[in-house]
Length: 385
Image (cartoon, rainbow, N blue to C red; front, side, top):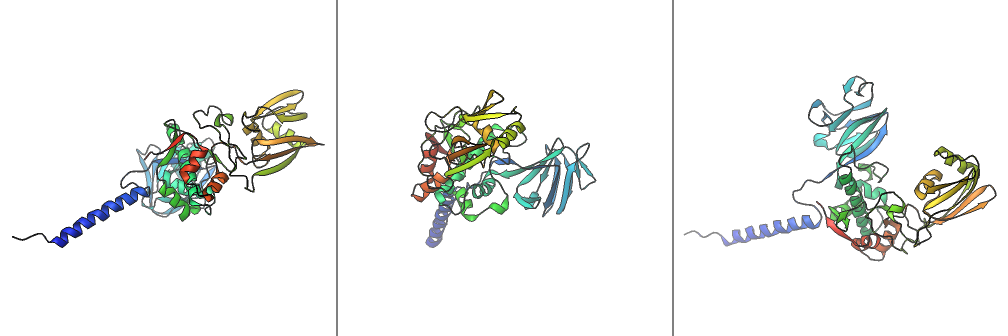
């Protein structure tokens, strides 16, 4: 009777062990063996026309993808708004809304910049809204190095990856009925050219991880420098409830962006306020209005003009004067002659993750979950796909 060779059995067992170990390694690296990643819809442009290039064949469908309109080999083409719909290359009539499948190439070029995934072209009045359909993980591999420096410690990069993923995932859940999930101004996204091996690794090892607050998904906001204390989300944006409480932060103090000063003439500020739609013929004074109860953070600015008070929420006031000028809500105001002088600290809205604080925490040896739990207290890490 022939016996099954012992060596063959040994090698079969060893092969099974290696396969199981490799599978476990894939999961530990954040890659599921077989699971489709969610697709996020990102607005990447809004303009009168769009120039696209596909390196391989592509197919144009109606927006519902129920009807194929045309199929072409690789080429470059331009689309603009016509009287009845979209016009391709000056002669091909398309509906107002189309979906373009990049097929095997899985990349396309828009106005000279390469993106992964597919693209939809949606007429929006006289403009075309260009929406990139891309897996959320590929999206993050462009977002993370666009939001923070690739030179930072990996734990800070991982914290940013989780925050950006949670922010995008929340908008995917809440904007399902809209034409897109994330607008281009919400997170920096520059396509393939922004990708970097180090930040891509940070995305990979946190695959599918987001934060939940009381078992609910929430928009995990972040900003550059909090200036000493983070802010309530609902103090910056209306109807933003279910967000972790603000926390003190000493970690961003050494950032070169921690302190700032700015001056603006009365004449210039009057003009900026009028351009926003407010009556401001004669600007008398401006002063801090509502303040945070736990820190000297301004929540509104009272503008006295033409004998009346205008109470401007801080994000509206910063928009009027320029986000890069009045960089945060932590500042004092003095008037000298014909100008207002602002002196403050921090950069950004102050809600959620302080990026420069995360940088210092990572340099101090803290892990990404420690960083996240500090800036988003009473939250839990969860893998959602």
